[in-house]
Image (cartoon, rainbow, N blue to C red; front, side, top):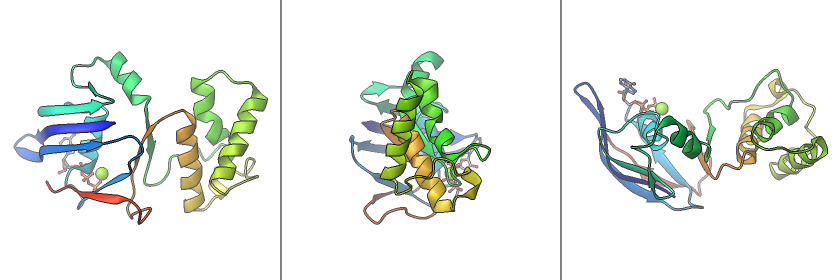
Length: 178
Ligand SMILES: Nc1ncnc2c1ncn2[C@@H]1O[C@H](COP(=O)(O)OP(=O)(O)OP(=O)(O)O)[C@@H](O)[C@H]1O
Ligand SMILES: [Mg+2]
C-alpha cells in the first residue's frame, strides 16, 4: 500500500506539488500522467524518501517514511522496483545474468535454483530460451520485459515504471496537475 497525504514540495519559490493525496492498494495499477516538469519524478522521489516533503506524509505499508533514518529507508526502498524509460539492463551481461542479478544480491540460492527461476521468469514474459543472448541484442520491448522480470525477482512488491507512452490501456490514469 502506498499513500500520499497532502504532500507539498517546492524548490526555492517554485511550488511543484501543492497538496497531493491518494492511496494505492496492493495489486492496483495506477498511472501518473502529466506534462514534462509537472512533478511526476519529484512525487516518486518523495514516496521512496529520496527527497523530504515540505509538508504532508508519504506512507508505505502504513509506515510514515518522513522520520526514518537511512537504514530504515533502505528497508522500505527494498520493497520497490524501478523500470526506467530506457530500461536499466547491463549491456555487458547476458539476459540470464541480468535477470539473476537481484537474486544473487538478496538471496542465497544454488546455481541450479537460480537457473530454474531465471528460465521460469523468461517464460512468463514470452522470452523462453533467451538466457544466453546479450542484452544489447534485444529490442526495446524485449529489454523492458526482461527488466520487469528482473525487478520482480528481487521480491519487490511495489514497482515504478517510467514510460513516455502508456504501457497498457488497462491502467487507470490518475491525473496530476501541478
Ligand atoms: N532537485 C531539484 N532542485 C530544484 N528543482 C527541481 C529539483 N528536482 C526537480 N525540480 C523541478 O521540479 C519540477 C518538477 O520536476 P520533475 O522532475 O518532477 O518533472 P517530471 O514531471 O518528472 O517531468 P518529465 O516528464 O520531464 O520527467 C521541475 O520544474 C524541475 O525543474
Ligand atoms: Mg520525470
